[in-house]
Image (cartoon, rainbow, N blue to C red):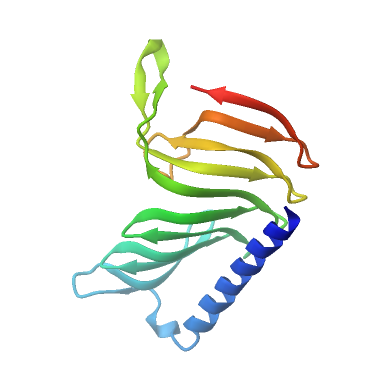
Length: 176
């Protein structure tokens, strides 16, 4: 398990260093627009709670995405393809430890119960793994999103497995 996490972190560091070296000499090419006024190429934006680095093509997010805290610490690393979250996304805690991985993003077909016995379909889903600060798995299962994969409103669905800090399976719970 710890070898896998070390491999993931090494891969992320390699991608980050490649991205940084690829940007040298192109400071004048940051935050550019194409002839249609759409975002194009590498964009770095200083938002209220974070700093983001995103690649665009014809106004759509396409390529590597990174988010940093205001202190400059990497908090999120992922990828977009034509404005859609794809690939594997990594989320990091305040001390640089891996907190969560989300992967296998796709349209959802599972119905979930809503208020007053109604059934609803959250349009997106992914596979989610949460980690303890020591690198061991905390929980894993399918996560549903009510609007899009960037939504703050999520629901656990199906079988979720929970582990103790040593990595031992402690319980399994089914969400419907």
